[in-house]
Length: 178
Image: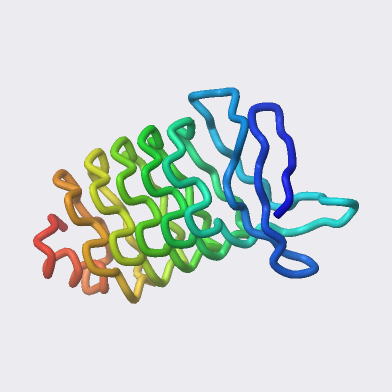
């Protein structure tokens, strides 16, 4: 585990290989309305590491984060990565991301804007469970799996997706407006 200081927080990284790392949260936050812009790479002890993962439960219950921008080096958002981020309102997920893990955004009550990757393959179980402010989401044709209760308790949600897509089948099977 390595720490890198930025003006508004200290970011935690886990080294995964000689060239890659995962973001594993933030500490010492000074701004309670934080726009979290995760960097594509980080230099640690003279070595450059590419950020390719948002680690499991990395930002769990962080109430400071309002928006998140994820770099196009990230391919996975792990289980519970942003679970319980009660003030999170928007997240931009780049086209490099192919997997959103179980419970990734669960209980992020204020989340109302999500831009999904156009290359996304999987949305995990309970991924957006109880994101009650989420009114619409555009799911690309590339999605082949949407887990159990991925959008449960998202009472005002409408799913937008290509006709005949897996997302359309999921919406209909789960009585979610399409």
